[in-house]
Amino acid sequence: MAAVAKSGTPSICSASPGAEHQISGLMAGEAIAAGDACYVKAADGLAWLSTGAAANAAAKVRGFAAAAAAVGEAVTLYSGVNWYYGAALSPGADLFLSGATAGALADAASTGGTAPVGFVIDATRVHLHRSGY
Image 1 (cartoon, rainbow, N blue to C red):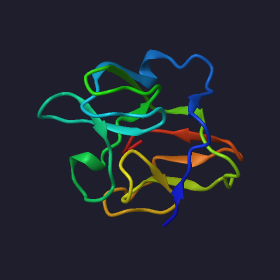
Image 2: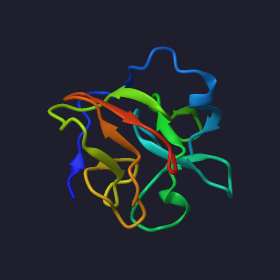
Image 3: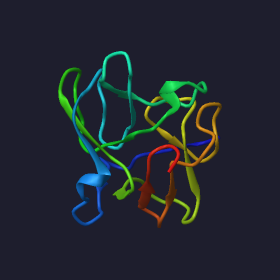
Image 4: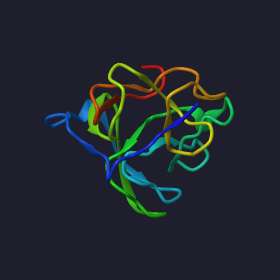
């Protein structure tokens, strides 16, 4: 399994995603970078980095952070949208939640990230969605 590296700062490239594609009004439970996969922890209602290290609540992806957020800052998550994400990506390849790096993507399934959470559109763009899409 190889990590899918971000190239620069990921950004949404879908035209004006509607409200059905976002979860707003969340606060970050930890430092989150743009393009990171996140879940909402039931115990505190905060956004945390998703990880495929185990098949548990943290392996659910509710969306991807539109911008960086520090602990306690507002964060908006998007799903079902296209992103400028990487470089030299393989079109058509499925993307999975990384089991090695929280919030990151990988090119193969992990223990908790068994289903794809997106796919590569072209060399620089990806389409990312929530778990169970």
